[in-house]
Image (cartoon, one colour):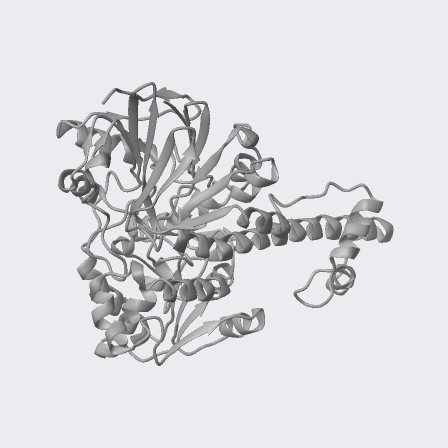
Length: 527
């Protein structure tokens, strides 16, 4: 068996690993890269293997850094099945459509800027002076249908007539729809044939709804090879979802290799039990000074966990009853997916809410925002409130508008509840806030949306909300599960984190290996 890592190798995005065995090529995940915009765009555009050579894909979960390039894969010739948990299939029906919409919208906006720059340059050259604000507005009106809708036909006409370079989306909505036809969802414990003499079985990873640990088994010439892939491994004792699987059946306990995530391999989270209190303190402190709390959050899992916890705090009377807005149509759709899969919930959620016929994702002051107009109106709201909006790393979406309206006011709080990858806006805000706290200089400037904003809002990081296991929880999974593992390949982590986890596990007598991007390595053994 030969394995090659094409992403999430020395970094935490772009999860993509090929397994070649018995003449079949099976892919674990096909995720999108995130980070520096131009660098990520270049990585996302090209696959490092022939999509037609892949027999099937096994998808660990719905997060875009694991699923986001599947439409590209299928548009370039992959015609197999995408094997995953049925909740992940349901979530991807919204996640991949949303991703395609973002791809198309970003391309349209960049083309609009190119056309606008060309027309304004032409007009300025003709008039031999800089254009006035009114003249620029007139040019913009040519390329727009109204204040927020672009005139795509006119933009295309201008660019084609003047041979301007067009930006094309990574994939279109139509290509995403075609890809969704390839999904095949199964419950945990299902064993599915994915190649010649190759099967996979899905177990609960506890990371997000439908996330799966995959055990892949191949038999050839009397030799049996068994490997595991954690995808993203969840935490223990967090709300809503069950803990990661620890009890595996006898046939899947002996692994030649475990491909293990290492996102937080050099860190310890705050205990999950402390998060409610810290969340309540942050909200109360902000409201007392007349501010609002802005929470960048992944639409899948993190938003639902926050809603669940705010619901509990609301019922317990531990937070002011201020409006809570979820400003993400995608989050609303995914929350409905959560409601359709109670079989994934832990016992506490059943006891606290479902047995009392209470919806865990709805309470008195909670509001779901859908339209752009509602979102824009919320930006202008002055009364204290909480807004939860995507994207979780502040790279795109409505969160950028909430930040630009709130980041400059010291009354407000920006609350981070998820991992912020290198070179993302979220990571930059956290680092600048830390530098400012140490140096006590004037408010640092944060550049996004083509403008600089002073970072005066309080910045709070609550890593205990993370859906990723930390170093001790990873170690707990390895020690308390009944798996016997010959070798561990560490993936999905920045270099320092991966190396720190390798050092820690090596000291415990576990044999680790850190794969290199694009370099195949062999796995095999007789049983």
